[in-house]
Image 1 (cartoon, rainbow, N blue to C red):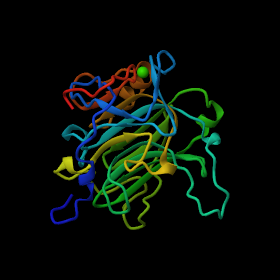
Image 2: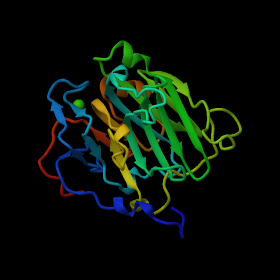
Image 3: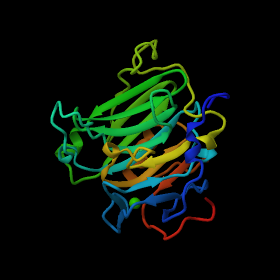
Amino acid sequence: MEHGTVQIHDMYNRSQNGPATPDRTVHGNNAYVRGTPGITGTGGKFGGALDLDGDDSVELPPTDSEALGTADFTLATWVRFDPAAVPLPAPGSGRADPTPVIAWAYGVGPTERQLWLRADPRTGRLVGLIQTENATTVASIPDTPFRTAKDQFHHVVLKREAGRLTLSIDGSRTDAVDGTEPLSCPPAPGTCRPGSLTHGDAFKVTGFHLGTRPDGYGPSRFKGSLDEFTLVRRALSDTETTALRAGNTVPATDRATVAHLSFEKITTTGYARM
Ligand SMILES: [Ca+2]
């Protein structure tokens, strides 16, 4: 956040303690679980998974390692949900369309730096967005795999690589198709001037929220299952992404993987390292 601006994120600085689920990386980005989500002991893609029933979520407290700044990144997670089962209000009802959130970080609103990945059942797509001080960039992909195999987990990967935003389901990829700000993303579709998702004072923003917008907005609530949420501070290669999908193999040769939530257990209280 620039100096002199109103720090509306202050309310998020300190996460409330509560039940938690561990991060497998050296960074210790253990996450709180909110609501009453369930762990399916063997029902996940790899081991257990986290079941969110529409009023549950996961909160990673903000840390320096999660603050992606201008860095390339890879956000990957297994997702199981049925977009066709999301109730859509009748056109003209005045009610907002549900857009269930898979992950949302940093800020909310038209001017805040933010990153999110959510479903848009009305249009039948998954949509990823990054908003920096320079640009808003969107990548979207049809949610068809979730409609044709709704009882299965699908691997969703949002990646920023050299000014390019891509979104994939089960390895099938689309590049960013536009910027929501018409003048924001020259010179070519799918590319943006480098911009920062977080400013230096990372503690002023929210961490990652899974299953909800950070402010808990009702139409953002996700109903479904998540497994093996992974955040990497660089763009994984196609080979690495394939290894992650095929064998849950997280790159171990550097410290770039800053969160890997396997959802094997929920503890009754948070971790001391938080
Ligand atoms: Ca798991």
